[in-house]
Length: 604
Image (cartoon, rainbow, N blue to C red):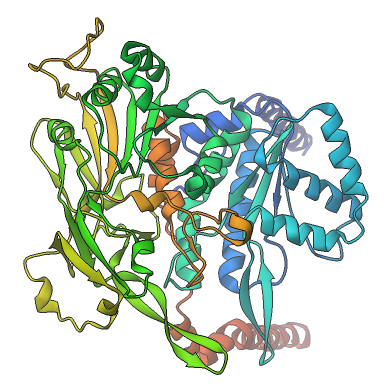
């Protein structure tokens, strides 16, 4: 008996020692296990690197708090679990969920939120300016109104959701946004992807796919110092800054950006080329005037020396503004930018046609007057294709630039032909099956909205490329040709490089609101639709400049199971019985059997 007791004590002591050793080792060794079949909580190496480099407190405020439908609860849970993973790897990352307009939020927290909203532009201010801002914030009387206005001014727009409770429907406002603050920087993080025509469940599923990238991108913006430099090319009638102000503002959060006057090349081409080589990316947005040979040589040698380029070029002269006249008619005709030979050398060609597509975005036109108010009606505008990545018809639509992305609005876009020259071409976006090119010159009239079409009109057409990624070693367009100006550093072949061509200059154009204030890129104030133009262009920029693999996080596959509402409805009674009635039945049967056995045992 004594031996058995000693043996038990010895086993207990060994167990305690093993547990203490494991606990001590656990304080030095960190390991988490992801048991999900899609490894949704296994962070990518890029994300881990960003998380581990946070060396001071980083605060994330998530506004997904309140009573939501089940789909938003899933988004809330997925966001919470991913941020818990961030916190597990680095305790400096702290987060909280709260309703910014809720009564339970203390005034001090609301003051801090307003201050963080002030910092979203990442503008470096003096200490005196900081004190004045804080003083003005603490003088605000109506905090909820100030928060609402700050949200609106920074593009953090809410969405309205319908809640069903005991047969009564109510409307609730949801802010699917987060704000990350690190030191003196703040950035907004969109948690819900907007997709026209998609159900709430589909939007949530796409958003969960995009969640790690959205959070990692936010961390990257505020924890890393800017390194890469972007030149916005000017001098050939490019788009005015006001019309692409929202895009420039977004780019400025992560990169240095400056206008670059390419037309000054005539005075000193060698100096202009040397200055352009200091930039990492050149953006050419809707040029309308011819490029000189000297300007082309500067761009050519910038590319050959490793400079990335994002081309947004119209091969046809026509704009929507030119249609808004008394006749509603304008002429579309080819635009000669003197770039055809350059593009041909790089491996693509822009056709001087405009694309007509049945899958298009709407426009609003006046259809008459009733009393003193003009009546407007939406019509499909077939010269404004609604283009979205679809792997069913485009194997390249799974590329990280366009993966999990919604539709992009184009206007009077042109077909892109790819040529064989050893450069890898990836079609990022193409038009629908029911699209075709229309040769120019051609007259375009607003009355075309009433045209009747049929599928046969598009036979042997469709799936026309409108955006292509080119990667490889580009050859100089001036190879075996006389150089426009002498350049002692001239090269004929460069190292591996990449560029993106988009056959529509207006893809970057934002509309203007009251007092000519730029609206968010992709937002159409006439139809109140939101398109993914900004996300697409930012993905293009990030891919061209991304050296840490951040863009590749977009390729992560997450399988999010959603309730089948039809099956829930048809099987509602059975589900009620299984979840509520069956446990009661089991309890009654167990009680009856237990009572019977007890009586039998003690009455024998």
